[in-house]
Image (cartoon, rainbow, N blue to C red; front, side, top):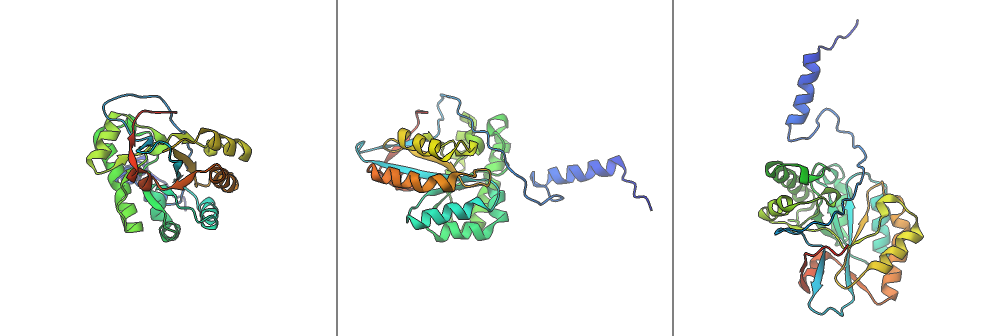
Length: 256
């Protein structure tokens, strides 16, 4: 028997998949997310937080942050390093990833790390209207609350892409938009030495450091021990973004 699929039926299935809040129900298998970090200098009345302007600018404090959008191989490796060094960090998790991997999310929470939202669909939100930006943030929020039992306070837009509308919309939904001041470039897998040297060179008081724990970041867990050791040896204390903010105020001028 030959199965014939009418074009209108295929179209109907596609529309069904797109219509469920942008979540594909016909292909639940996880697909790789390609990072394409956006670091375009922007100015405006609604700027995100790049670092924390410490009340005591001589305090050698900085925050480690990790983005996760897909995969389950790298997260345990990164968590094990952090556990060995008794180091807490801020994890920016995409809603779909958290929904697919509740066991890993629970491990992140159990280890005492701070949860941050990395949105829902991994798209450049500056290209979308306010309603779709809000939907992206809300969907991720629901997934993260369900997975962690916590209410995230920081939102890191996918790819670090933002404009005034993205920041203002996230703020209306109770989020502080968090970018970063120091990019480890681990998403490019440039080599362990390069990543370590870059972070040690660029870190400054109040800096927010960007790393990734998605499977696309294949060298992060190898560089992380040397990053932690190198910063500690230089007198730095690494904390969560929330802890950093307790000691200062958001730095909204882009230092990158």
